[in-house]
Length: 185
Image 1: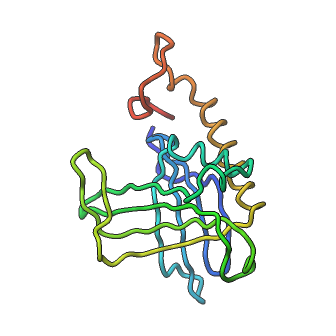
Image 2: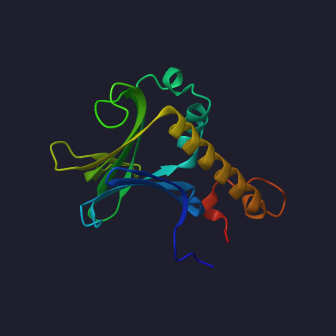
């Protein structure tokens, strides 16, 4: 049965913006959204990126146990995209001194998503087109908020795995090579 709605894994509100993480695990991914709101509470800008669970699992664990700044010294950058016309979607997570807002002058985690035109590479990847107009969205987390977000997403992923064990393994008990061949409820 195909799902007609998104399951929200985590949500964090900021001043006139929102970061949301949705379950797209039937294709092995989470969907990260940053949405900005105007004074009338209507969305004025939305950016999103799909993140492969295998690319982000280690980063979430390092956020949870606060080893992220040591492991990802230059931050974590994940490239993706697709569609017609081809859109590039880049998710970047950094640990840096926050310039403004409630965390100004303190260290925090910045999640930045950039969407814009892209060009398809030979093996199906998408790279951002240089000089093209881009939409960006950023969300800043305190250390405690980042640890909470990581713990929630990891817990959700582990519960999802337990619920779907029957489709992660084939009839002979061998692990399926990827989630795309599995029929997930």
